[in-house]
Image (cartoon, rainbow, N blue to C red; front, top):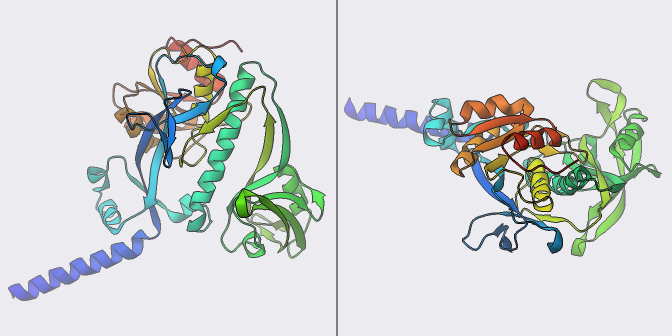
Amino acid sequence: MGSVALVVVLALLAAGLGWSWAQSGGYYTFVPGDALPVTASSTCRASGANPHFPDGGLCARVFLPAARVHAVDGKLLMVDVLVGQTTPWQYALSRLGLLDTFYRAAELYSSTAVLGGAPAGQFTCQGVQEMDQATLDAPVAALRRLGYTVRSIYHGSRVFLVQAGSPAARGGVRCGSVIVAVDGQATLTTPALVRAIEAHPPGSTVTLTVEQAGSGGRRAKRNLRVTLGKRPGDPSAGFLGIATEALPTYHLPFHVAIDVGDIGGPSDGLALTLGILDSLSGGRLTGGHVVAVTGTIGPHGGVGPVGGVRQKTVAVERAGATVFLVPASEVGTARSEAGRRLRVEGVSSLDQALGDLRALGGGIPSA
């Protein structure tokens, strides 16, 4: 009987492992990542995939004219989340309610929730496009807050998501493409692109003029023929199956550049904006505190929601932050995870973030 029981147990374990293996492929696991300083210091230098300090610590480098840079009192930290395909072990722990026991603040999300209908191969590209937009908008928001005039010219709509099996995917549109015209008519902003597509009924074939990365980093212009589908919720309107954002060129009063290494996504926009402001306006923005920040940024200072706030809260605590600025809609999540020594404040704009820093004793530049 003992041998029979052992065989049954082993069979059940094998079946359980096989089931976990099959199910885990449909999920991604979010775990706390890194909280790293945003700095204009030349000691933060490119090294491999990410900039580092001489002691090996990660950093995000803001490049500004040397004559305009101030020494900084305190620290501003940006924070990321590590995202990976869920392992069978993690899936099994999650089903048993034990995931947090082995991986603090870890959470599983379905592939649909993470990818938004895009194939898994687009995940990295999407993050790159979103971070690229953040590094474009952050200097603009900071310089406009300091009173500089920043002009913008739009060149088209950058694609950061192409739904699997969509008309756009079948027509050859790729993540990272920039759509500049529909049927020969320029569509230099995303609203213009939406209007041009919705003017055609489903089943129509349109010609998209796109710029796509070619050899040597050059962008090649191509015409793609795409047959439109039906827009969800409005079957009378044409549908491509993409998500885009207008691609601007900003004319800054002086050179600003940002190196975040291989970190992707849009959620460090606010942190980068505050880092630029701190270096340009006297270096007293944090009042000497270690302040962590997450939130998207728009070119006019609007702050938007992000993902992974629970995991980010753990990461910034581990990094020694005493203050954490998060999007207003996610302050409850952060506070539920934060310890007693971490103060969490919700913000919806750059001005509100600066107001919170002023309350901490920070030196805030005049608008």
